[in-house]
Length: 284
Image 1 (cartoon, helix red, strand yellow):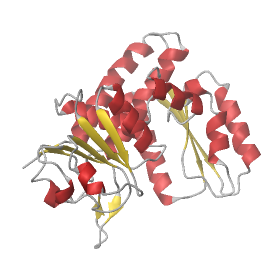
Image 2 (image 1 turned 90 degrees about the horizontal axis):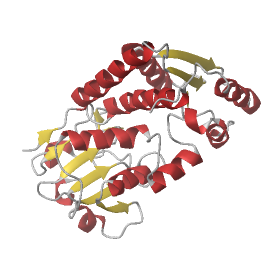
Image 3 (image 1 turned 30 degrees about the horizontal axis):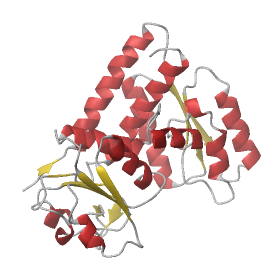
Image 4 (image 1 turned 120 degrees about the vertical axis):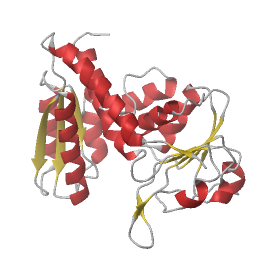
C-alpha cells in the first residue's frame, strides 16, 4: 500500500514559507503585488481567479483583478498588459487561460515582461528553464517537484517517465527532472508500446487529461506516481489520469485527485510572485 502524498499539507508549508518571507520584505516597505487578468465569464476560470485572490490575501500580497468583458479586443488586452508592465507595485502578471477564441494568447504572453511572467510561459523564461538558469518555474511542474521532494526520494539516477508533452506541464516537467539528474523519457499519443516504457519508471508523472488512463499493469512495483490529471469518471466524479484505487497498492508513493498536485499550483504561483518582487527590488 502506497503512502499518499498530501498536496494540501505540502502546499500549506510552501505558503507559510512565502508568508514568512513576505513579512520580512514588508519591514523594508516592499509588498509583493500580483495582477490577474480574466477575460469573459468562464466558470472554471472564475473559480481559479478567486482562489488566487484568496491565496494572495493569505500570504500577505497586494493583488488586483482585471475582469474584462468577453468582447475585449486584442488591442485593449495588449494595452492593459503594457500598463501593468510599467507599474512598479505590480511584480507579477498572470493572464488566466484559456482566452476567448478571438484573442491570441501567445501575443499576450509575449507582451508580459519576462521578469513579471510568474506563469513562466514567456519564451525567454522557457529558454532559461531549458538551460537550467531560471528565475521562475511553471507552477504545476514546480509543484510536482515539491511533492517528490516531500517523499524524501532522491531523484538522482532514477528513471523518470512523463506521460504528456504539453508546453505547460509535460515538457517543463521533463526538464526539471533532468536538472535533478533523473534519466527522463517523455511519452505521448504516438509512443509505441507505452506500457513497456512506463513499467520501467521509478518516477511516473501522468499529465494527459484522460480519466484513469494509467492502470496497475503500467506501473513498476515501488514507483513514485504523480497524477497531474483533473478529469471526470464515468459517474461524473472528479478523478485523475491514474486509476488510483488499483495503482495505490503497487507503488511506494502516490498523489490523490483531488488533494494532490492541485493545491500546489497556486502555492507555487505565490512563490514565483515573491521571487519576482525580490528580483525587481534587487534582493538576492
